[in-house]
Length: 269
Image 1 (cartoon, rainbow, N blue to C red):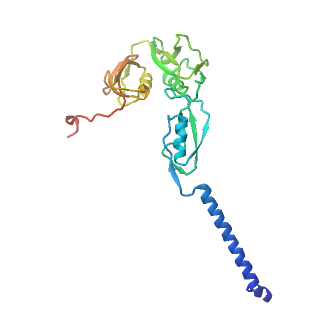
Image 2: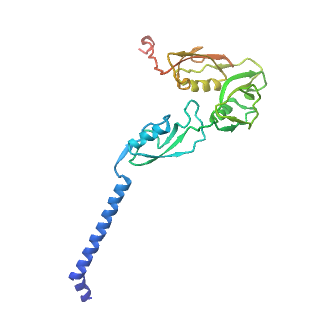
Image 3: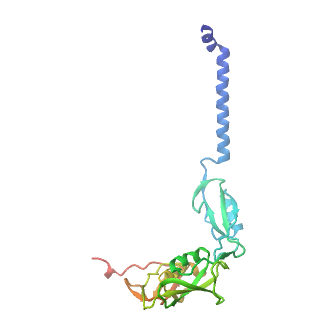
């Protein structure tokens, strides 16, 4: 036992222990330095908003802030966006990420994909509208048919005037007319407030209320109608106001919607 104690305090053991500790510290410092260099620890950048940019422009913007990218296949076609333009980014725009992070870009496909027409017969209008919207299809108008039921889709006609059968492949972006059961008596629908909605949102809202889009009036210069905002509508919205089902609502569109402040005499005193 005495010999072990003497060995622990010998110069040979102390030199060996000191050398071992220094070696471990050097290895740990080297690993931390390597991780700092490779992971860019502590260095972050904000993801630029590159949506709707051409791929070459998007790549230039990413590389200018020190980010890399990977293009993934996209099957979802976005109407009104150039082919090959960036439609989705992950992580999303304005997210804070590490320098050198790889972003995943989804681009608008160069050819319009085809999807089978969803099953629609005798199903609720709101449900069928959502299914058509998911496939990128457009519903231009509703035609009400006297029937025992109401708000059920009876048939769908495509833009060529042909009956569109369920599960028949159609290109995304195709347009259709819905024939919907309207009951056997006159029915009314509440008039929705469309001001401030985008043109696409207003169309979908009218369909949900079993109403049709009427005249579209452009206020000023608008490059993309789908992204325009509803400035005014006729008939004008009033609380609890009703109109016959299938009525048309005219819209005035503007490039940028600015909510109007209520008149002073209408504010509570």
